Length: 154
Image (tube, rainbow, N blue to C red):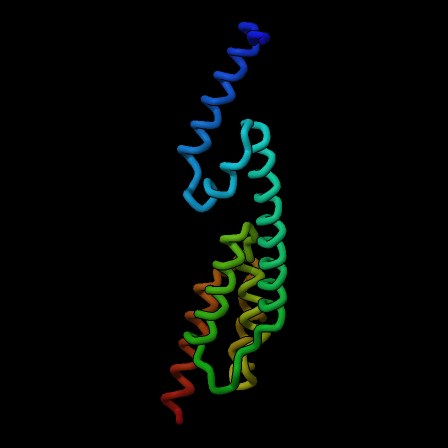
């Protein structure tokens, strides 16, 4: 029988220490999937492969959210509050996946999808405001103010 040399013993000890650190830091669900691997390199490669798969899923989800954003339209009977809640929720989901819809993009989207009854205020906002410098909150407030005036007149 051949005894391992000191270098091999040190390597095995470091490998086992690294495996212990990985086991302690991973959630139980992932831990169950990697226990079959015997070296830290094999475990790391398995985790990397799994993460790359998750990244692909995230990219696909992000693409779906971007498509939803593009297709999002405000319905005639919908209130500004209801619609903007959808818009902001969509933007927040995209942000959690690493994509940020900047305020000018959200403002333009909001102004482009409101029903015809908002045409007057949209034209006014576009003509007299700097859309690139306007926050989405400011656009929402202006549209809500106009919406309240419409309600009062009815």
